[in-house]
Image 1 (cartoon, one colour):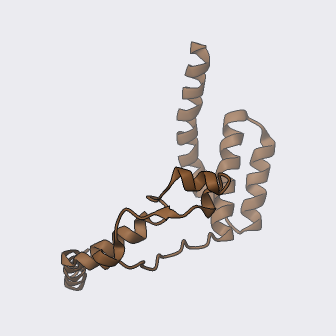
Image 2 (cartoon, rainbow, N blue to C red; image 1 turned 90 degrees about the vertical axis):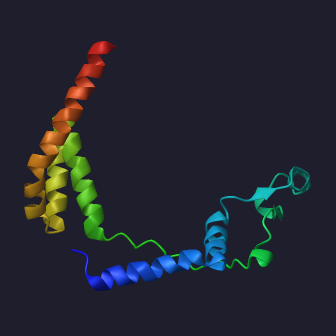
Image 3 (cartoon, one colour; image 1 turned 45 degrees about the vertical axis):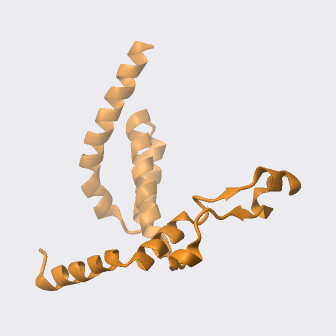
Length: 144
């Protein structure tokens, strides 16, 4: 549900899009290390090491007044999230190969991280998902 406060915040944040300096700063931040070029002669002079070559500046950021903005770093992945991914992967391998070792590994990992209830709730959904993949794999094997 969108409240009036959310709507006001959204409208105020859109006002930044009228500021050319703000837009130039966004572009400069996003282009850094992605949309940069080096001179081929300079690259040869550095022995082919692109990290030592000077970058060709094709946009004058000083004239556009664009500054580098701070980027948000990615949130570190928790052990519980990694355990959930591993349980799902192990259960998929069990379902597709009928190798009980994978099921044992998934259940042990779920016990270790106290995720038994979570895993029990997901098994039915995973089975329907993996059944479709199993059918696709079987259809692909018949064509070969």
